[in-house]
Image (cartoon, rainbow, N blue to C red; front, side, top):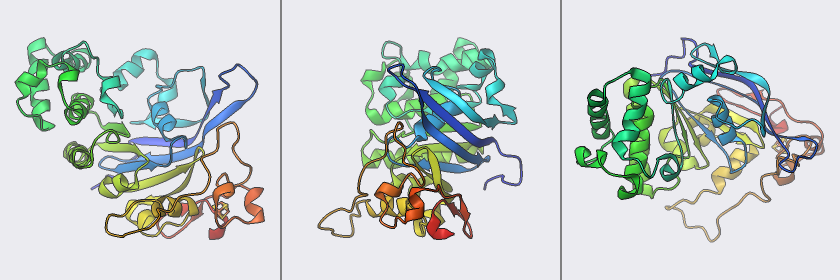
Length: 328
Ligand code: SF4
């Protein structure tokens, strides 16, 4: 159950993020262009799209984790628990990150400190944000390892990250992100580096833990199979914009935007034998060369002259909405 009658936990409106040129040249590349969405307690929203579409930059900007420069906040607002993220001081941000909002990244090896034992890493947030004693924090870490399904947690607490398997490390990361009981969990491709069976377990675990705490989950993925397994709602991104959004069952069951349709057609289906897997022609445009009009037009099988000149607005369908002139 999502609490959609109550105010949104996270409200993102017309977010615009650009990057300065790495060579110091003139011009700004727009990576996130007018992105808006809201997230309520109990809701699982997936941001989906190919690499380079702006979904990870969107996620990082929510907790102001992008280095600036080169990243530039060009406009729009982010409100979390009614608080304007852009107005937070460094101290305010520290109390937000890892406390009221947790984050899980794709590769736990780059997020876990290789020279610190799991116990030290798991208890750090509790001691910092909750003021627990070493013994209390250690007990809480032990309980969290049990909750995320790690066998023999006493021994694992004494391990270093390299002594754990990939799936165990990702469980530790999820445990660390949830240990302070955040109301929001942001997970950026959390299962991409894992094999399929472990991926399923991790997704089920995240869904179960967020449901149990009535928290909200924002999951970033390029994999529509992951969306189908876990999402209540989905927002499909292309070239920095959301091009289709709505309930996951509706968007995946009856996709309205040619890009979403293409993504779905290019998924392998183990039950249907195909001589060749379909692909979307072309590649995601560089942020320095976003096409005029509808940014998808160079790859779209339905392109019309108008698409090359005018960017389509959102057209509201019965439950979802999509940016495509075909829906006018
Ligand atoms: Fe294709 Fe035009 Fe729709 Fe863009 S607006 S997705 S180019 S039909």
